[in-house]
Length: 245
Image (cartoon, rainbow, N blue to C red):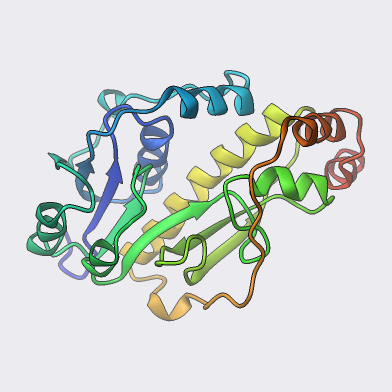
């Protein structure tokens, strides 16, 4: 490997819902992974249920064993935030960690361990839509849904931003289809950003600090029904505009 290339590693779990897809997106973009750090925390039944409801089965997990062409070392750790894991990142001289589904709120020690930091893709436009239901709140407010690639910080969804990209809504007709499109386009965007950073086409200087933003909490069942209806009946205006184009 070219000595000038950043050393990149991923944080995920053995059975994570999105981890395989995120790593696949990086491999497809040409990213060379040095390691995949595996936290043993199992996917919870609640996480599986939420994902199934959001995607209606349209994005099943991709097993890590199915990742053809990956040459990274798979390294089991007790906890992504453990001193041993942090030391491994330092010992391997990792420049950039990528959040591929860590179950942890990343500790300050782990955030500081790689030279550039920990990169993540948030399904929402930052800083306007922070939180786990950013997609749903954007729909309720008739705003475009976007993915944001950013460095993680101690403040959740508050780190410096590298790129924001609106979701291409072509062919989308339902809320689950919109959610699947958001995820899939996020995998591609994150992969392209990591590849650009690894190859030196983009640098830390390209990140922009976030200003004040808005935190959006979970949506209740009534609001979720409204989200689904707005997409299905054309009241979600960005989707209506995309369909008319």
